[in-house]
Image (cartoon, rainbow, N blue to C red; front, side):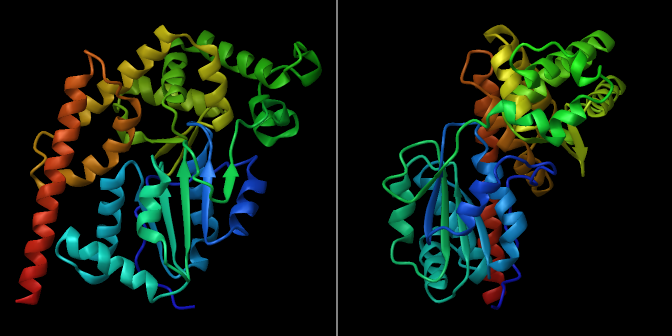
Length: 342
């Protein structure tokens, strides 16, 4: 099968330590042409698809990842594919061009992530054959074949490498108190040790775990000695991973922290993340050099910025700036396309 040289623009890299979803990956691998991965937010739907693309993407002639949060973003994602394949100048032309390319080429994979309404996807892909469409959604899968994702059973970590890694430096397993949930017990011991060694590192860990993302770019955090030391301490105790400029927090650890903390600590964590985003926000979104920074910042910003009196203005600035950058970027694409055709 001939493959296309386009590379998908993924929301982030897959986490290096991925466990507990092998059955779901196998079900996805053997699934029908149109399939849904369904489950509540925070269950790892996006991570499952990132792992699938990482492991099996080379088996497809083309892989394209589309943000499914609304009909407009779905159309923009298809238009971006049309522009990438055929240099189509406008959205009105690019979307049908992309769909026509898909109709006439086999082996492709389209991923629609975080879809609000499955019907918005089906409006475009019905009638396409020869490839695969995979949708992730926290809402009704609309009667399509679904891979359901729920919370991983925490007690499975009793013999898991993650649990064994967390035990490093702690008492032997037989000396750990047995409260009926050994994994939570071990996590409480590790977190308690961190807070005793470095309270700042404890707060940093809490913030990272509550962001609800498996990985966060290191560049989004301030480059201070205190944060560097905190990250090293957390990584040494296996509470986070540091790999290729990304900070990873295992899904099980995120679920543990989310269940342990109250509303006040959760709000403090979000406020901390808001301060990171605000410090990194480029001053002028109309400067092309700032666009890659917007692309890196916005996924985290959308995740952590609640619409409150304290954060709404920053949220609005982020959305406005991203929108302005997108408009200018599209104008530049059109200008270059016209220049090439002339």
